[in-house]
Structures are given as structure tokens and as C-alpha cells.
Length: 625
Image (tube, rainbow, N blue to C red):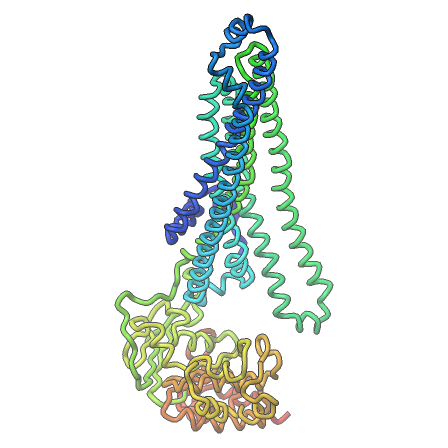
């Protein structure tokens, strides 16, 4: 469904609230976070001490050279020279005799501070990365758990590829900001604050010259962040669309090749890739424009400092050591400003990704357990549909309208009708894949909305029309619902589903890998394994959604014979395309456009229901032909 332009624009409104919410996740790892940030303070403090040591070295060298020159003048002129320089005799002696010692200790302290900075920088980087990886771990687990809990209606509206991007790429962007961007931001703030304090104490006049540059640069970066954050939202949206196309084509690669649609699908992927690249280039253009402007402002500030600092040296208000220290600290001012571009970029990307992550985590689940839902213990298997109406969307047309019937324990209920008549919807309502819009579905008189989902679904064995197997062995797939099942139980279920013989024909038997989505097995083999998987659960209610659709006539007969025995004592719901498979059902329900048009047993329906008779005789004619 296409979103109106105004709503799309509103959804992409700049907001950093989701990012700050994501940042709160670091509170799960308080000790690690505090240690990482404490290491930043020590590392920056060690770095800030280096220019001071450089000044001491340069002043020691300069003063030592001057003291050596003074030693060559006549002694009667020495007091006059010292007065001119503002030195005392004690200072003269110190500069003459201890200059080399001062240089040695200053150089040694530079090395010590460098080692301290390296050690604490390593600790800060390592701890912050570990912390961010833990946060990403939390996000991925929460996303996976939420996606698992979300109702089928949510998955109906969202593509698999888009959900994958949010659980991978979006989480990584948030992690990168928490592990790098936040650390760099704190480091920049500490560095900038400490440097400005030292510069004011060193030379307030020169410091005031560079102050006007900072608000200009900060304002430009704030504008940049406001502009780019919605652009990064669009980048992620286009990446999701690209990933969805890729995932869809890989999943359906056989169909693409069978219909020779490779060129068209390739062109569709290229169009999506072009859209993604075009949006990335828009962001790059903003970067390309911003940074030269910022560096121009910074260079103008440096030029002003060079001019006024040079004048102070000429007039003796500033020593070479002080000038060199000021120049190094000046780098510490402009370097954090330069880092802001990278930080703002990461922040904008992370804010866009955090919003997409919390869109999933905050998504309303249409199928939820009540606060005091009860455990559904062993049931008899009476299933009642009481005036059930169902819509996939609140404003949509009803898929089922006023459906009422009752399946007694142990009965077999067959659902017949054309495609879109509501057969699959009925069986989806029993395990609460969806919730009814009106009316109620009850098991043994208990509304399914009043019980826990796990206890409800453990009572139900399901074989869906689309067979899904998982990577692993045949044994693993049969025991999917009961991982603790014994081998004897697994084999018994396979035999009941007429799967044991073909399984044993493989060299590895039950340890045979099935491949991704069961690609190493035929459709009929996958279907029989799926039936065995449902039967192993020993359910009181059995749902077979056209379970014999992918098998040949001979195999179908074997499965039907096994199922008839296994369905004894179980309430079974069967959807089948061939009426011959459901003629012996205890209750046959004929559906048309979401309404029950007839229900009863075969003989009665054949005599009293024109709809059923039409289906029966049309299939009879087809079978004869």
C-alpha cells in the first residue's frame, strides 16, 4: 500500500529520541561503561600534559643557550643583562647548569605520558567495543524474540528482507555509534574543555581570538545533522528494499530461471541499487560541501592566531616555548571540531537506524496473552466456532462472516471451498495465529484468548500447505516440536507418515542433511516429514492443510491409511482439494466467500446441498476424463 506523501514526510521527521533511548541500553553494563569512560579521562589528561612538557624542553633549550651566551660577557655587565632579561642570579645558575637535566626529565615525562595514554586508550577502546557488542547482542535478541512473538498479520505487512536489514545493518549502525561515536564525543568534550582552560591560563588574549570560531563550527554541524538524519532514514529504507528484492529472488531462484526472468529481475535489482546509490550520493554531496567550509573557518582562525601570536613574540610577551605549547593546544581545539563531522554523521545514521529498530520493538502485537492467561491442560478436543467474523485489517472486508460450527472430540472435520473461501483462515484461528474480529473460538468451552499461547499450541499438530523444513538432519526436523523425543518415537512417527522407507533408503538414514529449506528432498518427501513432525507431538487436535497435495496417488493412499488410524480419538481438521479424500469425514463444511453454505456428512450434503453436489460431480467428471 502506497503511503501518502504527507505521511511519508511526517514519518521521516528529524528526531534523535530513539537514539537516546538506544543509548540507555549501556546502563545494562554500568561497570564496563564507567571503566571505559574513566579510561578516557586518564587518556586525555595524559595527552593534555604533553604540550606542557614540550614548552619545558623548548624553554630549557632557549634559556640554556642564552645562559651560555651570558657566560661569555664581562662579569661586571652580567647583573645588568640579568635585569634586562628579568632573571635572578639563582635562575641564571639553574639555566646554566641544569638545562640538560630539565630536557632529560621533560622528555622522560613525555614518554611516560605517551605510555599512559596508549595503555588507557587501549583500555577505553577495548571496553567500549565490548560494551557496544553486548548492546548489539541485546538488540538482536530482543528483535528476534519480538519478531517471533509478532502475529502473522505483522509479517503479512512486512517483507522478510526488510526485517533482516533491521536486525543486522541497523543494529550495527547503532552499535558503531555507541562504541565509537559516543566515545569520540566524550573525548572531544573533555579535550576541548581541558584545552580551553589551559589556553586561558596560558594566554587569554590569544584564546579569545579563536573562541568565535567554535560556535560557527558547532552551528554548521548542528544544521548538518538536522539535514542528514532524514536522509539516512531514506538510505536505510532503500537498503531494506534492495535487500528484500535480493532475498525474494534467492528464495525463488528456481522460478526465476524456469520462467527465464533473469534479465527482468536483474533490471529490477539494478533499479533498486541505483536508487540506493543515488541516496548515498546525496549524503556524500552534503559531506563534500560541509567539510571544506568548516576547514576554511578553522584555517582563518589559525591565521589569526599566527598573526597575533607572532606580534606577542616580537614584543617579548610570549616565549617560543609558550608559543609552541599554544600551537599544540590549538590543534587539540581544532581536532575535536573536525571529529564532530564524523560524530554527527554516525549520530544521524544511528538515529535513523534506532528509529527503525524501535518501530519493531514497539510494534503492537495483535495476538497477545492476557495478563492472567491460564494454562490449557489436557483437553478432550471439542472445538467450537461461535458466530466468528474475521478481518485481516480493521477497515477491510470480512474474510469470514458469522461462521458457526462445532467439532466434537475425535471427529474429523473437512473444509471444502474454492480458493479464497476462508478454509485456511479457519484453521489459522484455532492456534491463534490470528484473533477473531467478532465472536469466539473455544476449545472444550474455553475461549482460546483466555489461555497461554504455548499451552494452546502444544495441543495442536499442524501440517501447513507450504512445507517448511529447517537446515539440519531429517531426525532434527521430525523432532522439531519435541527435541527430547526418543529415536523410537521419531521412527514411529515417520512410519505413520509413510516416510520411514524413503528415509532409510538414504546412506545416512535419519542423519541425512535436508539442506536449506529441504532442497535435497522431493515435495512429497518434505510433506511426509512435515506430517511426521506433527504426529510426534501426539496432539489432541490435528490440522492438515492440504497435507497430501505434493504426493502421488500411491503415497497418498499410504498416508491416508496411516492418518485414519492416527486421527482416531483426535479432533482433526482437513483441507483437501480432492473431495475423495474427505468423503468419510464426520463433518464436511462447505465455504463460499467466507460463509458456510452447507455442513453435514457426505450422503446428506450430496442430496441436500447444490454447492457440494456441484463440487462432487465436477471432480467426478474430471477424474473420468
